[in-house]
Image 1 (cartoon, one colour):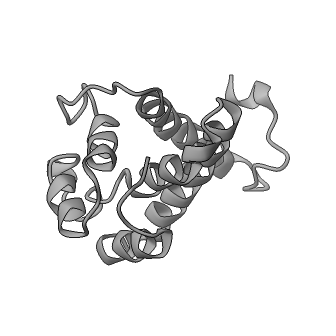
Image 2: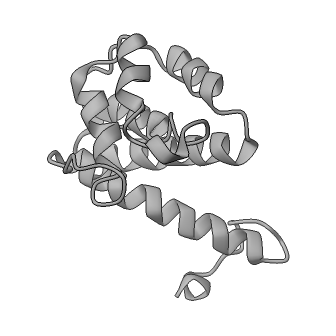
Length: 141
């Protein structure tokens, strides 16, 4: 799979539409988690694609929260992203803000990682250390 753009171009695109540090950190976190899962699940050759889907999954959220997953195709198409990336980005909002269902295993992982990284991030912000380094699984439960 290919995303139709470089990681550098994707990061520039993300930063064009997202300036809040929280949104940038969330995108970078989901990017890293998606890259890890690609390798873990046997999709190592597609790790760049998985990571890019993670990086760009909320491309439209900061500026257009009421059009989340609906504005993304326009933004990504203008940046020459391929249809598989656009589908993946839009499918992460399935049942919430999109009627595009996740089909590929990567899209299902993205759907789960978006929520899971948000939960972990919220738990970390509640800790005195503000760090994931000393977070115990029991704290999430």
